[in-house]
Length: 238
Image (cartoon, rainbow, N blue to C red; front, side, top):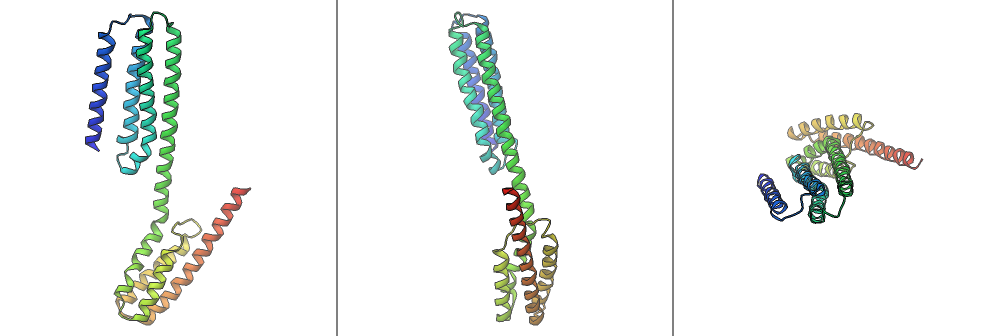
């Protein structure tokens, strides 16, 4: 990502130098419209740089870069439009009043800034939801991880079959935790720890009993998950 960022900075810098050379080497009439166009185009370069920073540098992970593409696209589109419009109105500076040029540029800049703020807010909200989801599934993922290895550690085939069935039921249960399921998940985690100990000690009777208890707690958790989803969908309809 550092190399891509460096390439982007170099590319934008080269384009800025080319623009400055074009603006001063071509004999445009140095009217007020010309200078307003020049200043707003320089501002556009800053906006493009800011959009690239927000999109790809601020949060450098792959998912953030993916969400950042709409932000960068807004900045680049605005920059290209402003560059073309700025050069065009520089050439027509004798005939275009400065107030009209300033108004057009201000509208474009305002639209770009609003678009960047909105896109960044959406991306930030997605990041928040992703982080919340990771936190919400952590408890069940930890239990699933502990149970998934137990069948291979069990010497008794009947107990191993029970463990495999329990691991499958955990794997296909709703992984998202909530306030309503926290207590049952704590009970399930404690039972899983006891189950691990029973398997390691080759206590088949205790292991089979703990499997049944885990299944009962899991059924209760599944019931709570369904109730919560029903209440949430009912609240959404109202």
